[in-house]
Length: 500
Image (cartoon, rainbow, N blue to C red; front, side, top):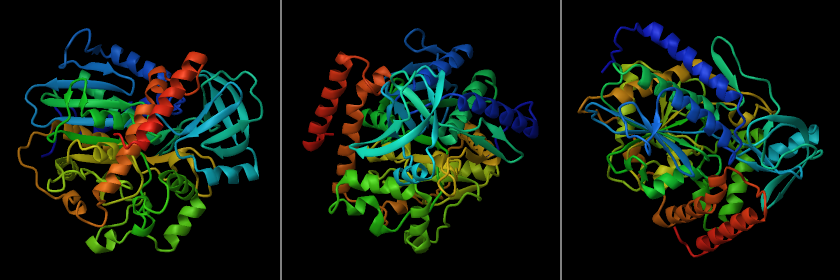
């Protein structure tokens, strides 16, 4: 079904799409968004929603024009109009790897910055980071002089002059730029996907004739770069403020991440759980897959998963378009529904064919919020739409600190695919997915492994509650210090007791 857009030529619409998304991308690129410190980004998004006329659901329920709701982990935006055939959740996150800096000049690295890579950078020349207050105001630029891992990845700055507690530390990089075919951003992961999501919200409000019969909930998760904590919270509860997530729900996760082959079975993290601690395996994965030289060594040795040759799948790459992901390193999506197809996968395959959007449909490495919605059983209908990002986490070919680089064609493709999916009304969708087959392949893990991963994630998520509620990592006074420490200790006890 080709989506019909009334009174607008497609080529003119695409120009408008591109301009709007780019403007939102420029805005979000200016905003530091280190993990845990989401407050000022959320404040800006709320102002933008209010400018569009949306109101909090607590004050006035109006799903036709849009409502929003907030908890400690996420912002939810909901529209429902007419007689939609399918219910969609569209998920994007608003954080990016960075450093949270205390007023003593010591910070913690969050997200996969590549610890081996950071050590190599320090050997060459102390890298610089821009320091922003928690409210997003530029304070200074400082050099990192030392990195040390002691239960957490700590960095030490040249001095602590003028640094407020809970400051963002963001790589010192040029501002947003573009050329004919690419956008260059500090935080394309994941603010380009967030820009696309917000452009669609803007269009839903201002183009009701295009979006007549829709049921869509947008989830802006505050913390993804640490174990997908916010999405874990939603998945564990199996609901949003606007209703339950049930097996009929379709979840579309938006990402701009790596597009790399899944590594071989014998080095997949889950297959080593019996011999090594989960924490040590996580550290090893960070070192290997966010250090270009170590990553290339693995793939140059042919250590690619046999699923590609077994099933005849193409290897994912950065040149062949958007990626329809139906797995992450930690799991096949919808793994707890082994006998069910993936309607979200089939729906996206249908609309990209109709809209002639270039895509890759294969398995790949990496992790995103799709993992959270799968490790805690929500629905079989989960897919990630990925804008391939070869410089993910600001890592250049040789480990240098660079702007992330993405193709405009893929940004536009993500927008078109989502608009078509939101408006999709066909009763029958051809089954062309591979999710069901993957659930019984070598990528499927047994229940004991899945439970270990659930225990790990649920307790990290539970333990982060008060830090997220306050939008900070370091305590500002004794009461907060006690609050954070007791919650953290209780989370570790829960994990040892295997509580989910």
